[in-house]
Image (cartoon, rainbow, N blue to C red):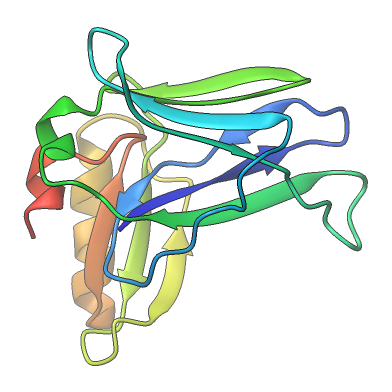
Length: 155
């Protein structure tokens, strides 16, 4: 599954968190709404496109968030060049140049997510830092800077 997640702040400005390839069950939005999330290849052709209504966070400040698990196609590993979230408040794009390193640490026995690791150093050092942390805790590592690396799709 391709994990797509993000939201909008209280002013409606969109954001996306780094996407990941994870095992899981599909969870896709009910069709329709003012927000669009689309994955495109390097030529700008759609690989996927989902229109949806973003739920407001109950105890938030007017912000909203979402998480989707989209069934991923094998060819996306090499083709997916960008993911864009667009809505009334603007748009936000992740691409192969995005450097928002993040890690997900999972239990090797259950696959359950045990920790999200943000605030990793930028650049190539981020994956090494995340790998050391996962090894110290005995967890499996999923890593992304924005768009999953092709090798991460083939685990």
